Image 1 (cartoon, rainbow, N blue to C red):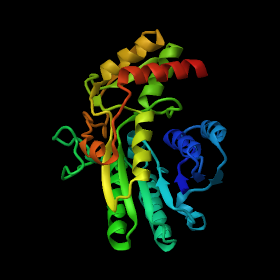
Image 2 (tube, one colour):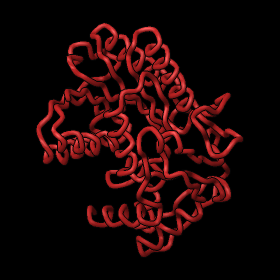
Image 3 (cartoon, rainbow, N blue to C red):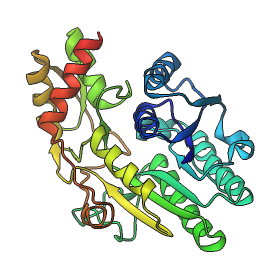
Image 4 (cartoon, one colour):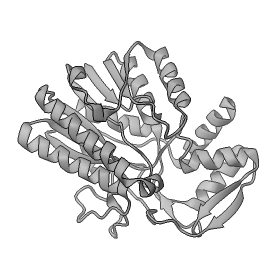
Length: 310
């Protein structure tokens, strides 16, 4: 299969790239290697992926258009500005990339007669939804950050293009993905790095917030199943379907890193939801999605990778 993968130098993208190459897909990767975090880490991700096979890499902002790269069977669209808190500081940038860039890609795909597109959405679209676990058909959705809003708008554009232009589109709502090559700005890696250096970690609120943490291998299972399934338009949650309090996450990091955390408590931050919790029944039924790595094992694997890479 010929695939265009946007955001392929990132954490999730580079892991997916390896899987696609190992199964024989022909992949073109687009990534702008922006300064959100060190571009050297993204280049290192690409170098690791090259061990699985050859691919074409194009350094480009998706806002510039990808029309010349769309002689493909499928687009997997992971490229985005990520992170809730940074989106509060620069919502216009997040809208330009995540909404404008996605719309530009959909228009290019329509003109090129691309038949299928997979879109990386987020649990952030649910906001602090009162009904647990979060179900794909829940409504109304009420994101509480610009990042969450941009992902929800992206889903809406996908639905429109599926209806109007026959692009078979699937939106995958990722729930707090972690694992080797984890982004340095994300809590798990940021906390772990600081614990190993003996520095304070900043805990916003009382530590009672809960997340549905999902190990990278489980996310890849769901993404690959969506690639191989032919849905006209669908939305799927991909999570472990379990809530983990922040306090327990810190305990697991301490246990697996062999060091105690120094905690600095700060007020709760705007844009942070109280909990996330994925219903995965729809993904289980349609995609055969069954997460295999609970948080205890996932943090053990992550900690082993991090300490070995230092």
